[in-house]
Image (tube, rainbow, N blue to C red; front, side, top):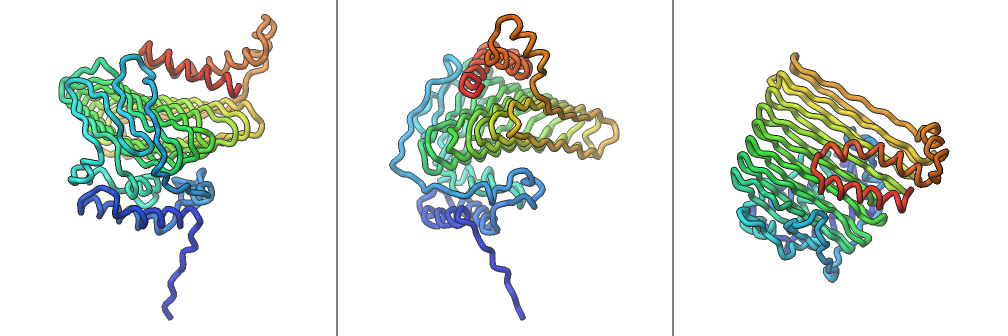
Length: 421
């Protein structure tokens, strides 16, 4: 007797598949793109990952993603003022690329055009059977920006990639290629004001000897679901400083998939997760040291209030040929509520024998003696707690050593604590 197991899909899974069937004919792309979309949908047909899938053990997407809002073609978002003065703003407004301010010396194309002629096809697709973020985005993404920074270009003007939503579903792609020896500061903003499902996938190629500062600021409203992914390749003697701040969203998954591909490549990852209300926020990093003499440091600071739940999964893999690798990872959490929680899962896979690798994690509360010290000097409790929290987070912000960026991020921290302190 032949028996086939029937997959009982959730309402969200049914909505995703029905949404693709409805929109497939109108999505941009040539035959190569259509093939990539079909592969992504096949993965979605198998169901969203649950806690039995190791990479999703702390974020049961099948349970947490209970409702998928419909697309809202009538929704129109507006670009926001840049966070850093003088920035060139490239806005995607509810899934549609808006008018871009293109700095001199670089090339910018819309992802719609590159999907239509197939240029973007190699960047679509999924990273394995558990890549739900990549599958959802590959199926639906229709626009965004592709940026080319030529070799030797030193951009003084920051680039701000905005993904602004006002409800419905928004699926966006960004791709940046920095040529050999290029230097740039790039801000990726994820924000909005609607009850939305947002997926956003970014690609960054850091050419040999290039230096890039990339900031991800996720500030979705408490009603929004945000699924983010960043795919990075770092070339020989190149340097990437990556800063991630999560300060919003109902359900957030931010994946960082990074390959230190060239000898002497360097990564500095700094992260701040400001979690409040009923937020569930998951930052998952997969870092491959694939070449000799590569270095990485990852420092994550988390502040948890209310009933918020947070996750940091950090996996570092060191290939056999990646001798002389130096990799250090730390995750530190400050719990400000008895109802909140944070889960940390550091993981090292080392196949080389001449390396220096380590990881650590801590969870603590505000030290009563420190709070008493400040209050004894006339500082009210809320302000004192704010000072201690800011001191806990400020260290990783100040490491950026870029005054306008540090001031902007400290302003974001102050604004968040003024509401959630």
